[in-house]
Length: 82
Image (tube, rainbow, N blue to C red; front, side, top):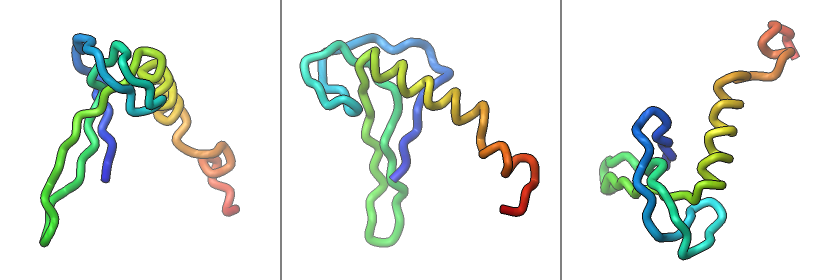
């Protein structure tokens, strides 16, 4: 399964629902991505929309920006063999 976050789309319209990160219910949530599974022999492809509250949306965006900024450890990027 893969999680695909939507980062470059227009802001989503909030709705009431459950946050998939903090698992709280009855919050204003926005659609932030999809949980997907590719199809294959004996498997059906699925795509489930993911919703998060504003606090968790901010946390996910920070995690994403950190991951894009520094994709590896400094010694790996420097070319050290260990």
